Length: 149
Image 1 (tube, rainbow, N blue to C red):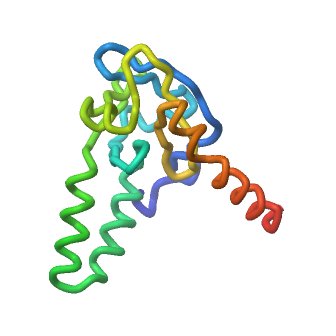
Image 2: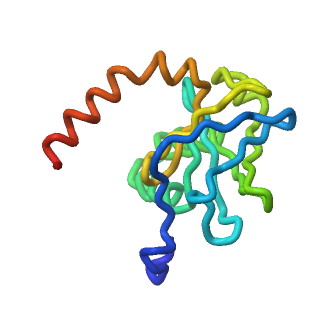
């Protein structure tokens, strides 16, 4: 985000939501997560889920990659670019998922997707994949927050 962007316009993604994936591979994004009139977003393919990030996270990656040298910088940028795509939330509040990526992480049309707020972005999971993966991660998060709270 530009330095002159007011704090209250910086996106923050909280809570979890369940919404169906429609036959055109779209999922409705919670109204609380819609900001800045169809802002530029990026969707990344992870091993078992998708991640949606604002432009500021792409800039953070770019800063990190620029510290790498020669072939390492090229390799990191290439990998990021091959697993990331630009996207936008449409006027009806839906995000279109790349079909091949959605299928790869277990999402199906007509089934519920779990949208998991992660403050700087959000994750999109097939419900069964999320349940299978997060038991250890949820406990770890609770333990870490005990030190914060």
